[in-house]
Picture 1: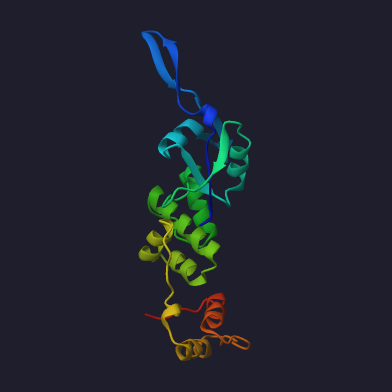
Picture 2 (picture 1 turned 120 degrees about the horizontal axis):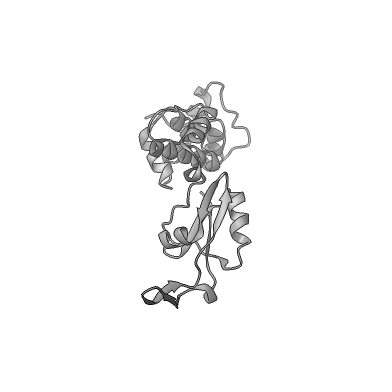
Amino acid sequence: MEAIAFELREEYTGTVEIDGPEGPVETPKFGGGVLAVDGSDFHLRDELDEGDGVIVIRQSDSVLAELLSLQPPLKSCAVPDGRVPLSPYERRSTDDLRHFASLRDMGTGGSREELLERLDAYDAANEAGDLHARQAVVDGDQAVIKALAAGEAVSDGLDRLTKADLQGLAAEADPPVDLEGAATNAEIIDRLRAAGVRKED
């Protein structure tokens, strides 16, 4: 999933010394703040500390992205390699998660962590336009769910087939996939994926 990141501006980094009840105390220059997002609190200092100084969120998390961009102490920065963006579902109640799952025709049972994983996986498949992976999430395919939720790519197997095999899949699909004008493997694969067709194991 596309991600964006924020970090503290230089003048807000580091610590300052303040007088405490038992003498001088080192404290961060930026003490943080609390943003109200989707009916819950987003603690800036906590999120910065947990993210090694960088908050990484989904680009599609537009409400939080706008709020962060309006914070004077923060600036946009590069997304660190390997960082999975914060899920917008993490700040929602478990009842909300069950409701979101039901809207996507997914099972509403399981723990909060399992609901988060399924919803994140569904959104990842949806954003990638991978209809098969999305259906696999709805069907409860744990391998697909865990891979997508972790930000990993899920292969539908089409890129390993010959042109003849791809054309065969298109002809056998119900309804058959129209390949008129699709000359290359990549073009055929795009048509098949748009129709939700994948290689059967």
